[in-house]
Length: 98
Image (cartoon, rainbow, N blue to C red):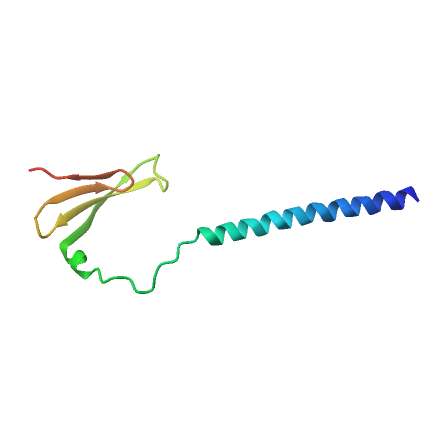
């Protein structure tokens, strides 16, 4: 009779454990869904800003610290002011002085 009682309590313990695992999993799904950002469908027209700034990829640098092992080098031109900037992905941008 003790074998039957022991296996019964073992089964109950496994079911309780699986219940906790399931509850933690479901809580993770709920938290993940709350963290999602919903973008509105009516995005404002950005054509004026796109006409003002011109971006050209000038090259690629190999970098062991970068996530993909590479960084893009970009030349950004403000068409209204004529000011040029150079940017390196993951690092930043700086105005080009001549």
